[in-house]
Image (cartoon, rainbow, N blue to C red; front, side, top):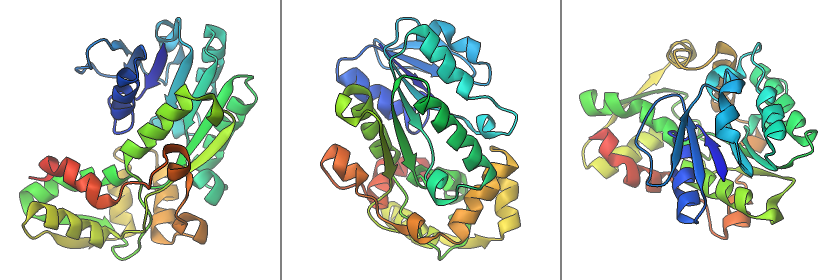
Length: 279
């Protein structure tokens, strides 16, 4: 049995589906009750209280660990989840980390995530670490404004990074959970090309068949919006990257192809599959 945390999210949902289709028994963990695929066991738990995972981990052979925004805060102790998994007899953990651990190692949220990676390496468990860059699905933050105003509002409109499709992250995670060949590996996950927020707005407009205008936010405006969902430290670290990506953050990683045997999906592909959210 494999435990998937963050099972209702942009990575966790397709990962749960992929593991189920592979014939695996899955326990999906989330904070809120939602419909799950047939045969998936669902456990309600908040990772900020790791002991709530005890029942979810019973009988598990592997764990996909996705840390929510509040677990990046300085006072959080996400490494306790790894300890709990080890005690429960889990033998493998796949951690969803962040590209910034290697490209911006001194950012406060990156220091905290590095500590989680280190705790996993030292746990004695089999492990793999996924370090994605920006998510294509971050564009869902624009869905309401596109629907109601025909507008995308974002900072740094002409600065591009190679955003990754969460479906690719999920497929790589499934491979790491199921295949011993990926044990002890760190995979950096990106899309196939850099794309700016303005170009993303154009891709949404093309898929809709109707105009979408672009409004550029200041950094301060963008941070105010982001801190409604994530700690200020994580917002600042993210804004530092998208404002001025360094060469490592602009690099197109070969790791999606290395694991899956195909190129990563482009942003246009993600838009086509999610265009209903913008109508």
